[in-house]
Amino acid sequence: MASIAEEGITTDGAESNSKSKSAATRSGSDHANYGVGWNVVRTLGEGAYGEVKLVVDSQNPLNAVAMKVIDLAKHPDVVETVRKEALLMRMLRNHVNIIKYLDMRFEENLDEFQIFLEYADGGELFDQIEPDVGMPTQKAQFYFRQLIKGLEYIHSRGVAHRDIKPENLLLTKNDLLKISDFGMATVFRHNGRERLLDTRCGTLPYVAPEVLSQKYKAQPADVWSCGIVLVALLAGELAWDSPTGDCDAFNDWTESANLDANPWTKIGTVALSLLRAILNNNPLHRACIKRIQAHPWFTKDFSKERAHLSRTYSNGVANATGSGTLDRPAKRRKRSLNTVFEVLDGDQSVSQPVPGNNSVSSNDCGTDVGCPTACKRQRDGSTTPPNFANNSFSQPENVDSMLLSYSQIGCSQSQTPNPFQRLVRRMTRFCVTVPGHDVLGMVVVACDNLGYTVRKGPHGQSILTVLITKTRRETSFVVSVYEMGGRVLVDCRRSKGDGLEFKRAFVAVKQKLNDVVCRESGAWLEVNGLVCSQFQLSQLSLAQD
Image (cartoon, rainbow, N blue to C red; front, side, top):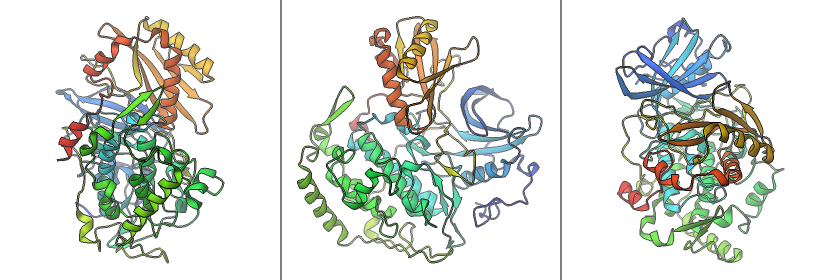
């Protein structure tokens, strides 16, 4: 593997100016001539600088990849920024939990820059999260282990992601998690020397507090974001809107750790102790990856408590039937949590160097250096990777002001001769009992009643774009109608913004259409891989053995 400097990235994370646009014509191809002899099936999504398209090999239609296209005629100044992103992904392409970079090239005739990435056919992680509910503990642990494993590798290569969130975590149909979207990533370690970062970037609900106020260490900031992801997995909601002093929810957590409020009442005691270690306001005391991997919640085999992990869903509310904590009075829960802290903190201290200058020691517990042997136990529960997977990929519109980067490429797939083959599974689709042209009008009426803004697609296309105007963060989704297999399918995919807000809006729209929703279509959708099948805890147990 070439060094960072050889890849054209300087030690401060900036792109080397010595590389011209023409020099980027081809780089790092695993296969010959991506894009040559490949057919564009359809557009997967839209970003700030262009589009992401699904392309298939004309000689082998089963071979599909995602192609990100940057229109240089409209965005002539971003080629170096996008190229840096591609080169960072090239550095990281050999890990199963990271979306794989395949190739990049400059298409001179079209004046566009193309990046080829593996294609993940399982959708985005947020689609597995029930809004305001979350998911069963074993399922959350299964995904969280893979996230930590992937992040550990990213950090080992001296790279910080800086925008970890469920929308940037993709899945294959075998539930292999893939970290994607390295548009805000940067190099923080080179030749054994680390630097502090100072760019304020990320997505506010997931960003670490120090990112907003000072120079910061890369690894603890990424770890914090993973903690917020875990809250979303377990509770189906975010901990706060922003980690700032004017946010009451954040103040309650840092000052008093009030557990008698959501989302904390939905989370068990041991998981809370892990979150207290991760979401520590002081990055010097925040849990590192090795400490997370040694935590009892991370190492516990929840399959042995299958009977206690069952959840029943009624009107969108989950009742954890055997957590042993959710119905415990808050004061008792707090005492129990403090006891767990005392046990864990007895011999698992965090070794983080004090920030002093831009060049700091790499012997912090966020790397493989100097960590106790006890921390090396029980790694991950990831499955065997399939042949290929996908990418959800975006770029910030302003590289110098990258906070609130909610523009995220969606994951809608296309129809092929087999209409099911290129559609990722997701829960935000359903069948109806009325013709397609009728249901589009009904969706418009439903959205109007909910206060959403609707923009119709090009004439003759069964597509709507819906802007959810009542949310604090700009969120929109695309509604498409397909007729396939003798059924009418309504497909909704997130275009921009918060995945949980999108799913809440989807539920509201579907309820408005309740009279025409086909009740018998659930099994058909699942058999054809169009929705996420019920996650079998027994399958998870086998996958982690």
